[in-house]
Structure formats: C-alpha cells, structure tokens
Amino acid sequence: MRRDDITVNAADIARLADVGRAAVSNWRKRFEDFPQPVGGTASSPAFSLADVEAWLRRHGRYVEVAPIERLWQRLRAGTDDIRLGDAVAHAGALLLSVRQDPAAWRKLLRLDDDSLLRRLPAQAPDGVVVDAGLVRAIAEVGEAEGPVAAFRGICDRYAELHSRRLLATPRPVAELMARLGGTAGATVLDPACGIGTLLLASGASRALGQELNESAARLAGIRLRFADTAGTVAAGDSLRADAFPGELADVVVCNPPFNERGWGYEELTSDPRWEYGLPPRGESELAWVQHCLAHVKPGGLVVVMMPGTAAARRPGRRIRGNLLRAGALRAVITLSPGAAPASSGAPDLWVLRRPVPGDSPPSDVLMVDAGEDLVLADKAWQAFVDGAELPAGSGSVRIIDLLDEEVDLSTGHRVSSTGQADPAGYAAVREKTEELLRGLGTGLPRLVPGGRGELPMTSLGELARAGVVAIMQGPLKMPDEGDLAVLTAKDLLLGRAPSGRTADVTGQVRIEAGDVVAPLIAGSGPVPRVMTETGAVLGAQLLLIRADPERLDPHFLAGCLRAAAGTSTRLGSSMRVDPRRAQLPRLAVEEQRRYGEAFRGLLEFEDAMRAAREMSESLVAAGFAGLFDGTLRLG
Image (cartoon, rainbow, N blue to C red):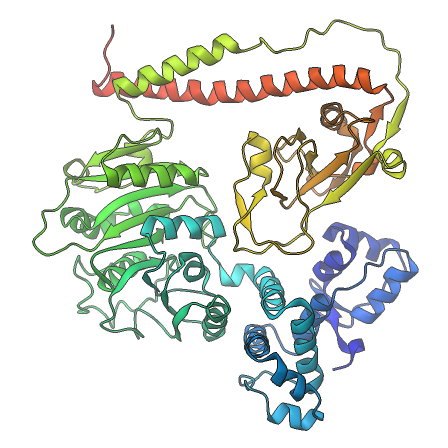
C-alpha cells in the first residue's frame, strides 16, 4: 500500500496535530483549502493522510508523524473495522517473532516481496490482506521502537478506537479485582476475558481465558504472550460451549456481559452448574456467577463484576439467598458509576468463595460502599479476612438479617458510605472533627482592603521565552502496566500522593520538587499545586510548569494560575487552558514569596475545609445511625 492510500479520521488528525477534536472541526469550517474527505461516512469522514500532512505544513501546524502512528494508520487502511482486531493480532504475532529472533528477521527482510510473504512465521487470518510493504513496516517499527512498545502502541490505539465495543475493565478496577482474589502467581480463569485486561492485571502464573469474539480472543492470547504469561485463550461461548470442562482454577475473575437475555436459558435448564438454582431468563449475571463458582477449587475465590440492580432484582432473590446460606457469597463492594464499561450505573463487585465440603458456613458477609475509593475496598476486605476492625464505609452484616423476602444485597441499605455506627467509631470521628475545627483558619492570611491600582503584568509565554519557566505536558497515552508512580488529576484535586502506575518509557514528564502542576481543562476540579516530592511522572490532562525559583516563586505562580480564570479558551462545555496566555503581576521575587505564602495559606484552608466537610458528614451519619439502631445512646 502506498503512503498516499492511508486515510485518517478527525480524531487521528487531532492526535497528529496535538489539538482537540473541536479544533479539527473548526479548521474544516474556516479553511476552504482543508482537504476534502476521500471516504468514510458523513458523520465520520476519512481524509488522505498525505493531504492532511501537506495542509498542516502549509499552515504551520505540522507535527512529525511518529513511525508507530504511521504504522497504525496503515493497518487501519488495509482492512475494515470488523477485521481490524485480527489485523492488530497478526501484527502482534509478527512482532513476537521479531522479539524472539531478530537476526532471522533481518535475513527475511532482505528477500524479495514474494519470498518474504511465503516465509512469514505467522500467516494472516482469513479476510486480512497483508502485503510485503506492511510486513516490512511492522518489522522496522518493531526494531526501532522495540517489539513490546510497538505492539502496545497499536493495541492501545485499537482499544481506544473500539472502546464501546470492547468494554475493557478500567485498569484500577482490574487491579483491585486481582488483589481481592489474590491472583498473583496462581492459576487464574476469566471466562469472559475480552482482550485479556483482567488476566494481564492478575499476575497469574497460568492464565486461562475464553471470549466469544474471535478477534478479541486472538488479541488476548497475543497480549499474554508479550507479557510472558503461560496459558490458553479460547474463542467461544463460555456458557453454551465451555472451553475448559472440568478445569478448576485457583481464582476466577470475570467482568461478564450485562443484561443478556439470549444467554442460553432454554438449552441449559438442567445444567449441573446451577447448584444454587436455575438463573431466570433475565438474570444472565447469575448464570455467570455460578459458571465461575463451578470452575474454582474448593476454598478458591471468585471476583465478578455485577450490575448494581442484580443485588435486589426480585427474580434472582432465590439464588442470592442460596449463595448466602451456603456461605458462598463473602462480600459485596459497590463502586462508582461508570466503573463497569458495560453500564453507566454504579456496579458491584461480588467476592465469592467455593464452599469446602464439611466446613461450617460463615455467619456474616462484608458490605462496602467504596465509590471511587478503591483503597477502601482493599482495606475493608483485608480487615474482614483478618477479623480486624473494619474501616468507615464498610460493615459486617449478619447473613440471617439478609435472608428476608427480598434478599436485598444493596450496600446502601446496609452500610453508611460515611462510616459504621458504633460507639468507638463515633467517638473517634467526633474527636478528629473537633481537632480539625480547632485548627481551621489559623493559617489564613490577613488580607486588608487595597486600592484598585493595576499592577504591571507579564505572561507565561514571555517568561518561557526569557527562560524563566519551562512548560510541559505528559503523553496522551501511557502504558497500562508498570511500577512507576503517576500523578493523576484526582491526586491533584485531593492533594494526595500519586496513585497511578505506568511503565518507564520515553516521552514521560518526570516531576521534581518545586514544579507547579495544573489541570489542562479549567473547571475540571483539580487546582494548581506546588509539588513537594520528586520521582513520579505527569498524568493525562495535566500541565507541568518548572520555574527558576530565583526568578519566580512557585507558590506565587500556582496562586496566579488559580486566579487567572480568564486565561482559558472554550472547548465544548469546559475550558482548555492555554498556559502561555496566563497573566502574572510583575513583582520582585521577595514580594512574590510573600504573595506565595498567602496563596499557600488559602489553599491549605480550602483543603482543610474539604476534609472537615467529609468528616462532618461521617460524624452526622454515624450519629443518626447509632441512635436509630441502639448502638449509641444519649450521655
């Protein structure tokens, strides 16, 4: 395929030019010479990459297209979207062989095109057309970028393009499920594995997966091989055609499809897996739960994603009751809305344990209203397993109290999201709240009315040209696996330590103490802060501004960025920050430091008020609940 044949869509152009999609739409309207579509549809037109590059150069907006980007566009242009997953998997298979024997590949690339295609170590799947030029491009990018980075690059782009179809579990949730199940070093099964997200997060010594979509199954298998994880991924319907009959894993993790009415109710009415009852036609998730339990060893754990509605739907109450009576259901953990890509509601994680014959069933079950606080889910589960005191936001509920007519497992009905109602818990929260309130306001700066005289101003752009500051932005995409800490937008908002994780690859921005980090999108919640630790890398949607502290005080800079609401440009319903337009008063550095201390005091007060508000909610909820159920009384 010639380079002129490669096409791109609006999202691709935005990524190539490092702008938002709205900018591309604006270019099409404003510039008569913007390239006309050469394909696609009215809602998603396709443009010639060569024409787009030429236009970007003419208008001074060109950013050199990375080889991995050009390879991705070539893969996309060579097949339709239905077979694109197969094309990506085939590219992965070739890159695997490049990694295994680079010398053999150098010899292959010296052959003529026909000989090269005949001697490929992996043949293309049916329906995927591969020419010698594409094979050479794959090998060249693999050698230049490294086979692992090259495959990750095209796989990430495929997952982003088809995010609505693939419905991959968010990485933090996948890692939580792995920790709850204790999957590291174990034999792990995922019977609805998609492209292998949960299996990769598990750290399994042996991974078994099954996936209905053949392209996704093929891609999952390649991803596991790149991760050097032994195992098998089979294509097929796990409920109707189990690929692992009789296999008992140490742990099963699963994020099954939600609300599927055609899961096999008619064909599977007498299936031996329904130990806890025949799943109703509209309760496909309860079929997946029992399938998972049938594939785990006695005493082994199952961690399965469930829609929040499955905790209380009337048709499923008999099976829920049987799971509780047998002691199979050990925890229900409610996450935040959107944590399951298949649903916009707040899903639950059900943690189950296959009963060991002869063991007495447990008397209680853990319930956690975690929301976005995945650390709470970790702490609560560990405390529950160890028999220790449970953290606020979780509770141990007697199974007998759940076995009423409804068998409602909704955590909101049983656990306050703000804490347990027990005397010690209430007293501890009250003491912390009073201590926090006593300290409120002590660090607030004393500000007095001043005149309205205007200060001389400068901009960050001018300071950058003068070498006073450097402005950096992290990469748009980061590897999903790794041990390197990442500062996220949520971390910036809460003023906490970096909570994300990624691999150490080129293009990342390392944070140093004294750097100012600000949100890329104004009004998105996070506020500019001065970093106090060195070593983490900058996350998505964040800007880093590194100043010469002898010429510009970092706290002064952070405060000015916070105050400069007019230095943003409209981007849809939000405001995209243009850092070079941000205005700062021209002050001597000694005066800047005085202002910086005032800005620091205001931010610390804001953080303290946020903590006080959250703590007061915990205190009030614990007080009401304790007085209501009798665990607290008037003193």
